[in-house]
Length: 460
Ligand code: AMP
Ligand code: ZN
Image (cartoon, rainbow, N blue to C red; front, side, top):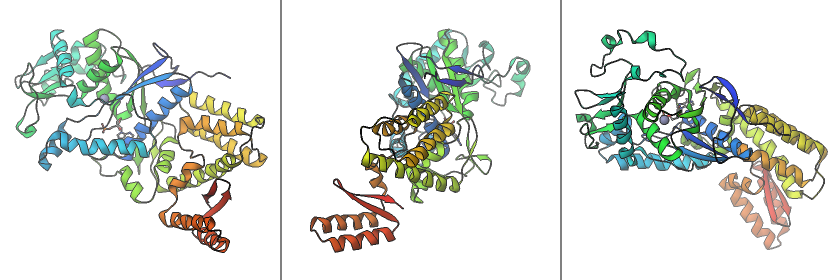
């Protein structure tokens, strides 16, 4: 069965096939974190969505070249560094490191390139210069440079907003008087007192790049003037992505990006989870409460990416139970898998899974196919290795199955101590002590099983 991968393109507002422009490779740019604090799980909804996206692309036999920027200079990072009295690079390093550790915890595949804004100031200056040369950008009296939105006819095409009627008289409404038009946005920001030691020399004087120019400059540097796919959270669509298009296309005269995808927000009590609203949990907050990266990943990915997802602890509890169900089935298969013919239901489940992920990343439906497979596997008592292969194939997209071995990682320390004691007792052929420890482990909620490879444990 062959079903082509289709996704919803925010630019055309249609579900369309995703086909590489060249070299069987999807060139993908994903807006990354502003490294001034720990990322919250709302941010990780965006990053897990992008992870699922890249995994589905690979599932379909295409390659991915993903670039994710690290915004390590902006108002927030500068304010944070200056308040802490440390250099900007030292301040952001803490959060960059934390970000990469969090990606690992959530089993998010690394991007191919993580360019940091501060390493690409010359590229950004060159792009701004080009825009000034082309007459679509202008310098204001204070040494900032703005993009003139009226000079780019396509402005508004991503957000599907017609800006023409808003332009007349807009100048009077602009409360930033340096701008010629209220919609104009900064490409380069002149140095201010509050920037302290942060700043770079440019043809317009000392200053720093605007946020939008960062993404246009770095995406084109690593992916070319025209590339396949660009994503972010829905809040990035306007003005950030609209401005990226304007900057890139005004500079090159070429189409910037073929397909744009945006994920809906993670909410808390109906509101966007965000730092400014103060209603956020970082990944670390949830780990401290005893939830695992795998359980959090499960909750974040198991909703359609274009639908709002309300965060609730009950969802984490459900995730724990669902994962235990998967573990029980898969671990049993791992223990007894044999070269037996594949049962018919395995291929059926894989086909349903494939159709679901290729239908604009319908992950809830994909999980339904996986649970059909769990149910039928349990009911049939099959030992076929081919069934395990299907679980493995599905997990290349989902990234939540432990396949026996890794499940041990999540055993609490006190249970692990009992297991170690039991292994020692068995090595000493002290069967009475081994049985006593088995009961103690059972009382702690874990079932221990022995095989020729030693003991393995599952949660009861
Ligand atoms: P920021 O660090 O604020 O630039 O955000 C980084 C990424 O997280 C962007 O793609 C945002 O669109 C996304 N994002 C921020 N808050 C949420 C949220 N509550 N739900 C989903 N995505 C979010
Ligand atoms: Zn961006």
